[in-house]
Each structure stands twice: as structure tokens, then as C-alpha cells.
Image (tube, rainbow, N blue to C red; front, side, top):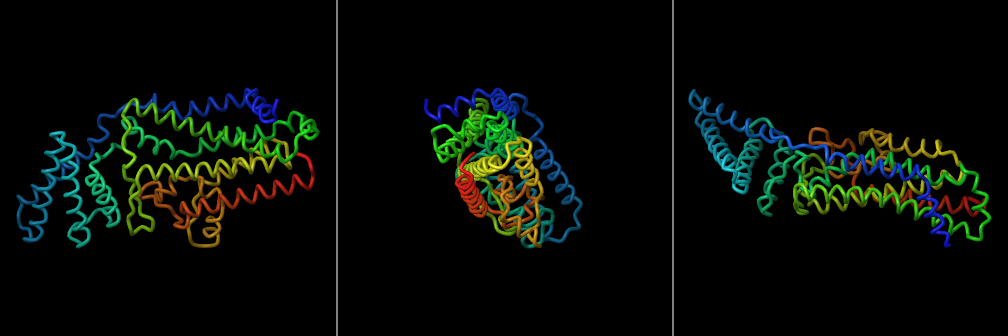
Length: 371
């Protein structure tokens, strides 16, 4: 029996780990079967459009408007009526073009000051998304998760990161502290296998299995959503503002690849950190407490100004909310507080911490010559 197989067998002999695996799969997949389509979800926009049309007609009928104001309202009314007719005829392609024309007119009004309401960058984001959809002959996807196609649902399902890292922390801390808790670590230290091989095998095995668990849960979510609502398009646009002024368009494919990259680096970081902790303490509560502490700290965003804001850029837990970092905030109205928290910085910082922990673990093992 090879040592790798020995570790793999011991890993899956642990009922607690299997239970955690199943709980995680249940947590991530259950929403697919609990969600029901909301027929009124997208009707709010339609009602608001009808309300705007009625109000614009009343304003024009009342008269006593400066010519340029009356002209603007009449043009906006025309665009709104065109959009409403396309929506009611269920002509989705033409409705998207009509919406683009309407929102482009609004953008020009916001720029020249003739229209108030949305901010300039907010309107730029909307127009950029509509332009991309029209140019690439794509339809707008509803924000109702119950009817989202697979690609869009996958992006949505990766946003709640806390359950992922909580369960992963439980699995890693349990697996790495197992020998010391069971008092079998002395046997491991005397078997005819080098400490280097034991360490590498444990790290690769535990990291691979936890990463595989996470990826399988996303894959199952993708397959279920595809069976229910179709695949969608990997070209679907994600529109962000990196600095609150300019606008950038990312495809769903690029967005998911960046999410996966940060996610896997965070899993690597948590795994090597858990391994490093168990070199000093076999207490699962110590191991788990440190991991969960970092996960908990990731909920707090530090502003970019001040010493703490500058330190946040080099702290690994700052990048655990990876989807929010890529979209530059939870929503447009809840932007990222620290613009230095970027994908590139996240990759660099996490790689540095992983390398540092690998180096410190190697030094520790060489110094004490035991696990």
C-alpha cells in the first residue's frame, strides 16, 4: 500500500468529514429546488414605465413649458411608448434596442443637465451593458434567480462566500489535526517515509479534495440550472466601474475564470495555513479558531485612506469576498471602499502568503524533524 493511498483511505474513513461534505453539497444545491419563479419580479419595470408615460402626457397636456423642455419630454415620451409597445408584443430583441435608445437619450440628458435622477456613472453602466447586449445579439437576463440560465446562476451562486470557507475550514482543521488528536502522530513520525513526502502528500490530498468538493458543488448547480433554464451565454456582460468614473465590460467567462482563480488561491492559503498551525498545535479548536477568525474578518471592509486601509491591501482575508472585489462592490450603491483591492493585487498577495507559509513549514519540519 502506498502512503498516498493510506492517507486517502484514512481521510474517507472519517464519518465527520463525509458528513461535512454532504452538508456542504446540501447547502449549495438546496436553493435550486426551493426557488420558485416570481411572476411579478420583472413587472415593476413595466409598471414604472407606464407610470412615466402617463405623467409625461399630463405634463405636456398642461402646457406652459419652455419649448426646449417640452421637446425633451415629448422625445422621451416617444421613446417610452416605443419601448412599452415592444415589451407588450414580447418582441425582446426590438425591446432591447428600444431600451438602449431610451437610456442613451437619458444619458445625454444627464450629461447636459436637462435630466436629473440617475448619476452619470450609473447611467453609463446601464448604457454600456445595453450596447454590449445589442451588439452581440444577446437578450437581457432577469435578476430572478429562479429563472436564471446556468451561466448567470453560476455567477450568482458564487457570491455568498461565507458558507464555502466555513465548511472548508471545518474540513481542513479536522483533517490536519487528526493524527495528533488520536495520538497516532508518533507512528507517523517513525514510518519509513520521509517527512517531506508525508507533508506534501497531506497538503496535496487535503487541498485537492476540498477544492474538488467546492468545484463539484458549482458544477452540479450549473447542470441543474441548465436543465431548468438553459445554458445562457458565456459572453454575457458584467459591467463595472473600477474607479467610480470609468466603465469596463467583462464577459461572464472572464468573470468566472477570475472568480475561480481567487477562490482556488484562497483554498490553497487556508490549507497551507491549517497545515502550518498543526505543526505547533494538534488542538482542532485552535486550528479552526484561527481559520474562522480570518473568514469572519473578511466581512469588514476597510476604507482606502489611513494606515488600516493600506494594510488591508496586504492582508489575505481582504480578498475572500472575491465576487465583490471583481464587481467593485455589492451593488452600485454599495461600492467597494478600498479601490486597491483588485484581482491582480489579490493574486499577488495570496501567492506571497502561500509561498511564505510553505517556506516556514519546511523550516519547521527541518528543524524539529517530526510532524
